[in-house]
Length: 328
Image (cartoon, rainbow, N blue to C red; front, side, top):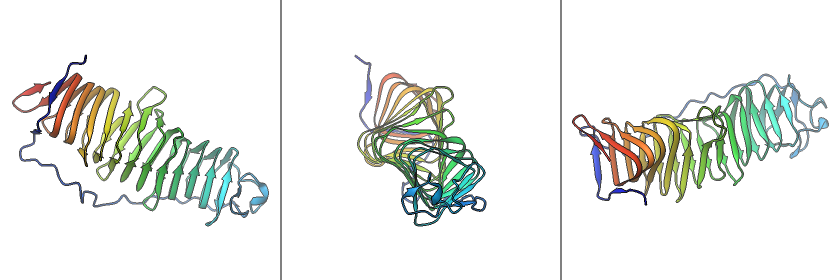
């Protein structure tokens, strides 16, 4: 049987004199500035039917398929289906491209709508999405980046597995509604505004090596708003914004150590569980439940810590203060 220490009365460790948790409302007062790139002039323009095939030469104005040196353009109001591997210099999609194979770009690109069903979106330059990204499955990768601009939204849906192996910059709202997310060591999620999680999910390091990174900037908020469990496994977290759970559990495990700043707080009922690794909280924790189940956790003397109950099953929990260190 596990050893257990339970504190079920209200615990308030206000280690900053006179500090209080600010209200959630009104925290986000600025929005990230759009940095949408401008591709070069179109060299191949789609002029085929709506919902036509990218891979049909007759659907392009020159009757030649776009290649590595081209800027491939799709006019507004048209969807193009890409079902075989394509490599182009850049894309400028005013309409929508639906990907079920591989689309590879090598230069700065822009798209209003991208729908990734299966296969891969490979960005070796910067890809700006200005309308919407629908990620239903497959892989987003490349040594460039994919940016959701302030005018856009992204939705990660369906139960299909998804893999990220590039930098994903979120300047607007990303809604993760289904499917686990595997991150390679090259992955970096840079959240600058809203990252909403509405399903049970696992975000994990898929390939060993250096841990991927999840950054939540000072203007960012990460919110899980359904009952269930969100697991972050071997992902380095850099939080300067707000992480909140409307209900359910957030489980963190790492093979190293993380210093966790920013705000970690509940909307309704939020249990934060530290499963493995070393964690130091430096700013604000305000949760219903705080559980240590294998990790070594330090609440720094700069932190404001509040929890309805604290439980230690395995590992350790240390509260630092100027006069005394308390270890549970």
